[in-house]
Image 1: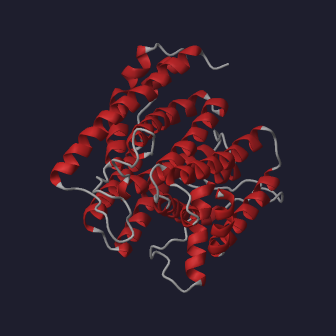
Image 2: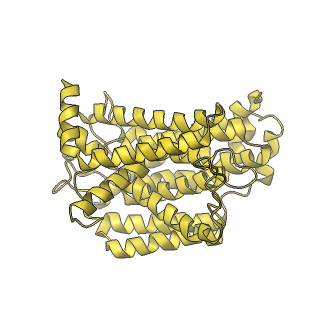
Length: 378
């Protein structure tokens, strides 16, 4: 049984991050409006007023500050041993990961202000992924017993495969940011499943190395959603994530996903992680495939994302986000509970491939999917 002190100490960590995040987000929002650092309406953008894209900066400023004051937060509630001494051995994020996140944040800020050339952005994505893989040792060495034929160990291919996966995740999270509360809400769901997996399956060493990163980021994201998700008291977002936020969150999701599914202390099967992060992964693939088959450039914006089909079917933004996030929560539950309940990894593997292909078909046949959604709305 997890000691009460755990919930006290680490619960305070989340709440402190939430409170700090709300203060920082509001301060940056006002400052951004004052200096004109805003995302203005027009073109493909449908918001009515200029909105500061400072969500990512606020999230990660909160996250980095919490690395400094986290030990105080935990000690306030006197977390039970061995968690009471967890911060004594906790050294924070590896400097390589800090460097990768810092680079992607700077890139995102510049892109939010001046729109960096797509080729340069893509190059930096690969550099950042290389820092994680070859500098911080974040590497996918095995895919597990994915199809019931034995463990799929990648050998020499682990390095290029890991780099490609990280770049893909960065772009997938970035591309999902199309509606108020969608990318942030989905990231909270993903980190929530990662937290649950760590708490219920990890040994002391992994708990003390992962939770001090997971929980402050989770709290900071929840603070951001207070300003971004639609609610009865706020009809539209007052801040956006911006490219800085989506790309940096993508880096952290990739880091957690690999850290929790590889090595001797892994708490999740690789296929479980694939289910937990499935929604942005399969959505990006469906979009890329549709653009490719229709002769469009892969990174040219269009309206072929999963959420666009709901909008075309005249669903409201709030209802659309609620349904999609519920779907993401269900996909994550399949990955997490499937492993906990002893489902064959091959079942999860073939099921994920079926999900991946069926979603790609929905993306390609988007007009028909939107008509079906229109009927369901009525």
